Length: 626
Image (cartoon, rainbow, N blue to C red; front, side):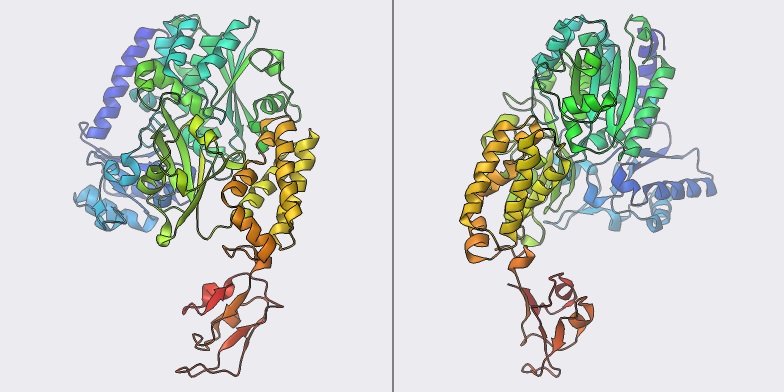
């Protein structure tokens, strides 16, 4: 495509093709399979091949198509198969189920009811995606196209609205593009929530012979997979957002920094760059506009600190990934000393929507100071695990109970950790708080990149703080002493407390160290390292005191502070627990419980390694932790 007129013609033809595929006006049934990492690891590609084989065997190539699409989001229910035009959604599909789906649904028009989603509260079977509670309160902007288009087909992306935002941007003055993003109220989705348009304006104002746009895809928070899913599901949107940003600030080159652990995302991104270059949408003099732009990919080695923008820039330059002192900020002196803006994947994925639909449309969603939507990786102790995109202002209760389906097994909600290692825990008192950048910070947590880990009554909050501190210690680059040494000392204190060797002085030192590391570290990794400790101390100090004073773990998680024992009157003497015990510490006694025929067993606490194998084996729940 060499002109805007050619792009317009392409948009019309591709839109018609995608529409006819979905509504069936092309005379064909369309089978869509989730192609996200989770579903691919659960044999989604083998399911596709099985469908293709059945289509070929029955000579139905002119009546049925089958495609891989991006992530459906509902990860705990994958792999998914969706069939158009009926919009039927099957979940937990196995390779063995394909023939039944093909025979009954594709050939016979009969829904395979056993593969439909069942609402846990009502027991109702739901056939359509949009009727499932998990999806009802979601609104897809950053995830636009995910689960709908083939992420390796540029024509389907164009048919779904791709490059219309770029076309509009190229018809505007660069400053007008920045003003549009400012008017939309878009804030960076990578964690800090800095206004995106303001960051762009800093780079725009700095004259230079070369400027850069960098996409931060180094998603390192435990349990986070938002950026990966966006890149896997619609890489064209992120590329379009990068190009719009480049045009706005006067940059002609962009770099994607994506961790090497995301091979599917990287391959689809490479494919998108190749197809866009071949189509004339990327490269020199794009569609005759005079604007040229090239995109490159750099693979990260999995260092969490490289999510910090200056460490990321060092890594792209081939240096060790360590933060730089600021100022100067990257917008003034960034990649190779040139003005650079660094935006994360989700931020850039929102930009085409703003230019395509208008700033007012984007700003109409969300709260006064946090516009638009936010993608969360919802995990932990929640029934519906997956990727969700919700309007800013949605409450934590709606996220956990309406979308997430509540806590499994009727357990009591305890806390939700937002913002990963940089964030903090929010308790039941905050369930009705609206989710936005400023409100979460005011409550002692933060938005972060979008990880949301739900915890129930069986989680020990001291152990949770220790888990995050172990992660931070491993990922600290070591450049500054407060982070390098302070986090190690905090981990040592937490370890002592969880092992039953803590003192009240340890608690005082933990708080003092947390404040010192927070105030004196060079980058955000160290400055936020103590957040999980501070928030758990604030909301769950009684658990710390129980570990220190009573030498007990209320949640019965910390091994050194608990014991396994057998309720002998419940024990039937089957011996399964003894056979499962790797330490050989469960022995038969002489005691026969009333009404039982065989002697019961007991645990030698001095030999017990507290692995839990005995509890998992006992069918009568005669073994308890205390």
